[in-house]
Length: 185
Figure 1 (cartoon, rainbow, N blue to C red):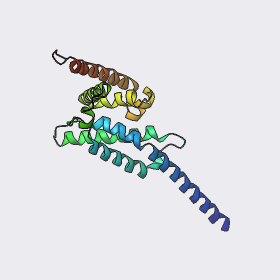
Figure 2: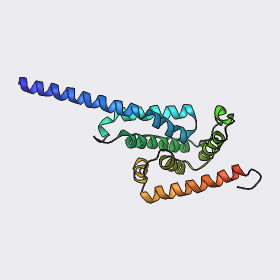
Figure 3: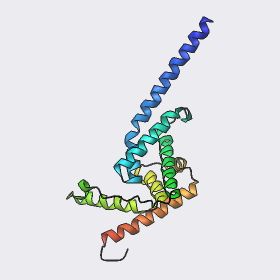
Figure 4: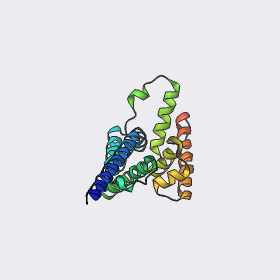
């Protein structure tokens, strides 16, 4: 009997250590989660809320995280699913889903040309379809492979490829209109 309680105690300590390791790995991903959330929502407060909701869900479901894997893909999948749920909820309540908020005034007032280009790209990115934006941000901004992005979004490879291609096309079209304001875009 004493051996069994010692074994149970050792197992309990080991499980606690694993949980602590997982929590640390999740915390290390917070900056990337914030970046992805801000790219999706463009509203700092809404993005922070999405990050917090994602972290709460992840911490409550750590057993679903496959051992040995980096938490990034798992966390991005959670965040994406929460984002899609928010979009669906807004549609159900017949509210207009507007993802574009005021431009970031500190960035917009910067005199640097490359900073202004970044504002134009970011602003244009907010104008494209949310599903295409999510796919494009994961592949082009977060640098995920198509396979990892497909898994994070829970969509087939062909759908991801299509969304990225159409998102790039839509983004290019918007940016051409920005760069030539007098001409139709």
